[in-house]
Image (cartoon, rainbow, N blue to C red):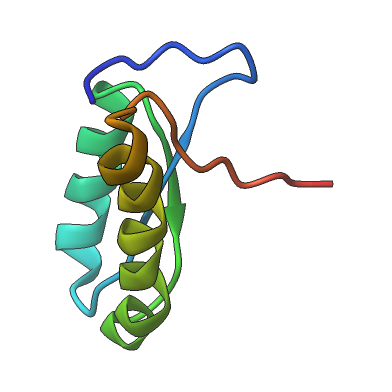
Length: 75
């Protein structure tokens, strides 16, 4: 998960929380790991973010394929 390489570009890592200082730190760590950070707001957003983990796991468990990620497209 560190410095992933995908033909479509840098994958997005979604994060949320109620502590602004902690979120700034997490954003920097995400960037250092080679991901695009996407702040989804307060900790209440975890309810929407956590199911993405389940979607990520489905092809991994079914096909033992773990080389995929989400990417937020911005227009």
